[in-house]
Image (cartoon, rainbow, N blue to C red; front, side):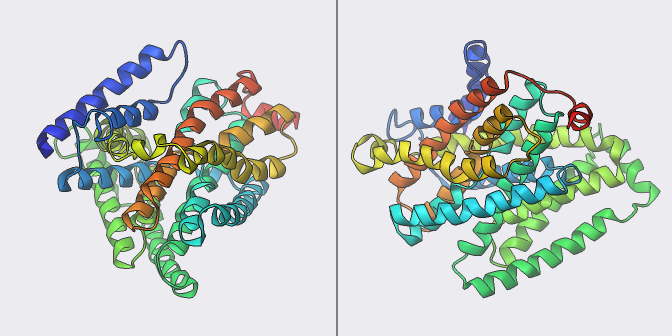
Length: 397
């Protein structure tokens, strides 16, 4: 099939997936991403053989990954996750990284183990947040704790990718990362400076016109940070994440009244086109034949699923704030061990670099898909849909 035909097929899947998710929601709230990847597998070369790869499709998929990580960075409200909870979440992730690298190295050797171990420390905060919002728990004490642990579970692996997977020596990687941090700090300083009065006026005047000044500024910011990361030899995921954090500062600091409608437009571009395209392409590239061929690869899927709980979940359970009820701590463990977007991203990097085998990548992504299906639902059942407002829970504590 031509690339134009493949693109039409991919976008047809992107339209069909939310219809299927809505149709089964009453029986089981299956995350949308599961349908996107599964349908991608169905039309891919290992099943129907209707879709394949191409330069245009790969480029759009890379943009989709960048947009996904950008939106993840934008979601994090650092002012709400400071203090003891943030320290606990950071230590929990560092312990997970040490354990994950050790166990993954035993399973697959050091080279592939770095990719697998880093992926095991991630948390799918963007997948978990809608479920907590629907359950009325996002603005609760539990929700604020989950936000902290989830934020570190997204930010930490991206830093680890920059340090461990760049191919440079640790010292040089640290120096390059420090240079990127300084340049990012300069952009943050610019973002937090008072904007002239005309800035907010232009944002408001063009918000519903063809000008779309604020949306174009956000896209420019993403392009600049991606270019900066690439120029320094860092993975572009780091630039995308930093761009998301900076975009929140720019919009909320300079045009707070317009921040939400601007991001609604950016999210429409991301979740309406680029992000689902990335997930469908992930399904198309999924090595189903290797996974179903049996033997070691098929056994790795349940092993990786358990490792998500052991590597990511147990440190979270051990370091969860003591004011959380026992059920909430167990639920936090399950939510934190839920992974998928960064697992897909890291395995994609590993396969493209020729380090990870496609069969191991398929087992790891398959385990992450099962985690998205099972862990959040189990966590919600443990909590029983409880979600007192943050102030009320803090006063009770």
